[in-house]
Image (cartoon, rainbow, N blue to C red):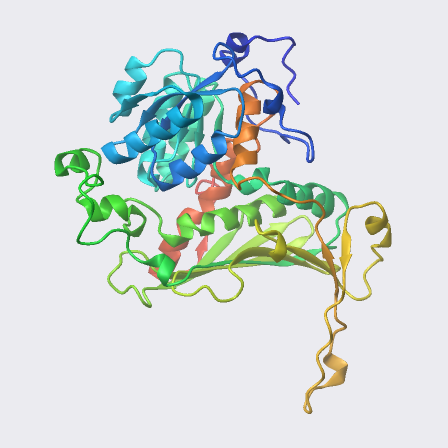
Length: 452
């Protein structure tokens, strides 16, 4: 928890430097923000920068958090900007100011405390740096940038300004993930020695199609002059910026970054190398690979770990998205979806009866053991593992706990769960996956490559 003196009024703690790194909110504790007075004088005044699909997802979480006042909406699209302004008015009963240009917004709006940034990846760094330099705390979606240089600039700006900068790796505030990391992997060391990690995100062909078509509603179209001013060649680039190499990192950044972050977080170290393979196996004309597979090597205090990751954008088979950590005594499978999460105790590992009795775990019936085939070698068969549930439900939108943690930190009542420096250290290896796949070469990391 924060070491700031109490009591603090809104202005005194918002203008002071607050620590950016730390353990954050305690699992199971009620939201600190739920007790805040929603009076506008005590509210945190926010600018929403980018109100496309992801911006709307974040706003649908933000509107559940008391004590926030949405003062401005900034988006280059008249359609998105007006949509955001309308949704804000429906929540707080008054229309926020609307802006196309972030520089105009920062020069005009007085009394802003924080910005929530959900613009395309190649704008994350410029927008974040501008807001930090203007004295605002920033919550910015991941990836930090489409380039590692842009990500570094965000860390430098955050630490120079003394303002908080949370990056949207929302699993870092998810109660299930925090419990798994803090109580089971680190606390009880339930896996024994972790020797392997795996993760995947498989997205169906239908969900991977280009956005938009030949007939776009006139209200959605952004004028060419505006598009060009903000780095887009045309409406296709604007609607499908994730497909272009100079605007994003493609599927490995868009989807894989969430899960590779879990590798780095749970293992507690950065990888020493990456070897990746990718291909345009269906979307042959796209700049980015539609399928990527990567192997990261880690040297942990317990020993070497190899982590395999795949992102497939042409099929949803294989159980969607999840991460697993395989140890000598157990395997933990985590996901934002409760039904996909489980823990498996290896036969012969120490009993978990005590953990079940104390509520750490909930035993599930063991899966039936398949009948051996005629040519099976019985000596090589392993006993079916016992399966356990992770305790506790999770009934909030996926991004909400991470946003709650950010605003609790702004109020001086918590530390960030994913500040800019820690996010950079976790994201840095991801920037080398596409180059490894393109070059068809293993990349051995140097300290300089992975540090600010």
